[in-house]
Picture 1: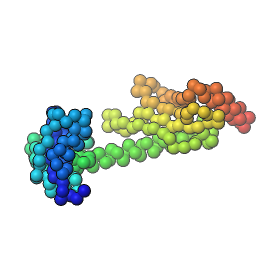
Picture 2: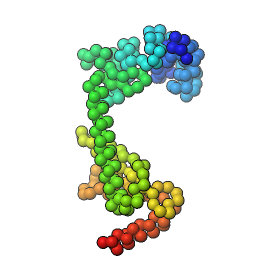
Picture 3: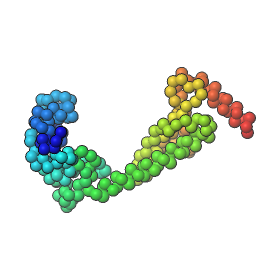
Picture 4: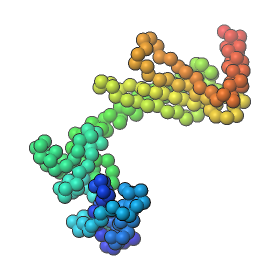
Length: 225
């Protein structure tokens, strides 16, 4: 659809949740708003023309600064602060410090955006470290043939300013498996003193086959010792 046919509309539900939407008519914008913000119900939707935002129809991207200057507010993805004109006035900062747009991530200021990027980089780095640790544990426990793929889940959190692995799960296959992959799992226990517990999970229906395979591995390891 050509951008010159699109017009900007303010689309809000009863709780004043909504967005600026670009559509050819109020009816089209109302239909979109009902689907996005009102469980498909048209009643209670407040849809009005917003000519000042027509300038963004070509890209469909409405800058955070523009929204704040026109009475809207957003939530900072890093700090969680309410990004409205009052906050910028209290902080003695211009609304031009707002980073992002209605269609993506928003940050109250460039510093918060940088902090967020640093956090994501630290978390990604720790996830790589823990994935390698889990792989080594898997190989040392079940042998290299168990390292069958990259299916994993690693959850990293920040606690008292430190990056910690809260949970790490690595899935693997074994001979005779018929239901689902088995897994080794690590969960942080802040009440436990000493080395962490490593658990192994296997589907009940595959348990006998797994135990037989495990016994064979242990026998081979004993004979090779």
